[in-house]
Image (cartoon, rainbow, N blue to C red):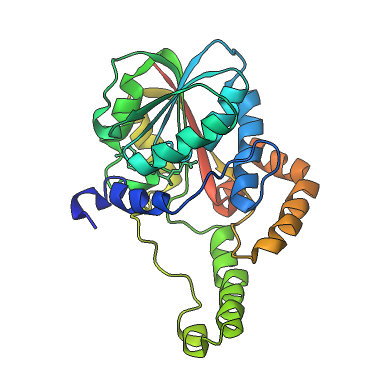
Length: 278
Ligand SMILES: C[S@@+](CC[C@H](N)C(=O)[O-])C[C@H]1O[C@@H](n2cnc3c(N)ncnc32)[C@H](O)[C@@H]1O
């Protein structure tokens, strides 16, 4: 692992991880919990962020570019940027699958190869929490925003949430059963608890996130709890039941996303942060 990039996005960890992934965003029918989370989020973000369809949007640290694929399918002009070439390969496959057009840039968020004040909307999902010092990347995201433009980031730093509860209960049990099923008894008793992730995750509080983002030149910054459902380690054939369960609760889920409180901040696996360029 490249130690220099570990606390600056863990780019090499992600680049290795993306090599083993396949096309994974399905606009019509999510096949696992992550697909459903992206699909659900893209739907409510459409109403929040895409009131005006004639905008230019960039997704920084796009990975597979799930949300941008959805936005592009809704007619938004989108640019995707990632430091990982293997992520961009998947993002391109997602776009090609739906015959969508987009611009793909291999670049570093701490030094964006983009002129200032170009975009109406700058978005990122699951990226900023991988920086020990988020300011250089956020300042760059703000620099390329037009005045009055919108910044949106979803983050999942190390925090207490429903994910921690699931990791210590259902996910331990599922890993235990998986190991037993394969006859890996020692593994089952020693290694069924969640492993420390390979990538870096910061643990700033909600207030610290807001303060740092405001210091980077954004105003009217609002943070809210997001995603009351954890990611589960299920056998593939069980995801359809979990997705069905979440679909039944979709109105409660939407209420959760739209009614911010200390409780939703605590329970939510992620935080949504929105702000505007002065
Ligand atoms: C958790 S993944 C994001 C996944 C993505 N948002 C999605 O929905 O699939 C984090 C992404 O940020 C990228 N990244 C990390 N540090 C970066 C940096 N300094 N510049 C650009 N991209 C970076 C990684 O390569 C990785 O693809």
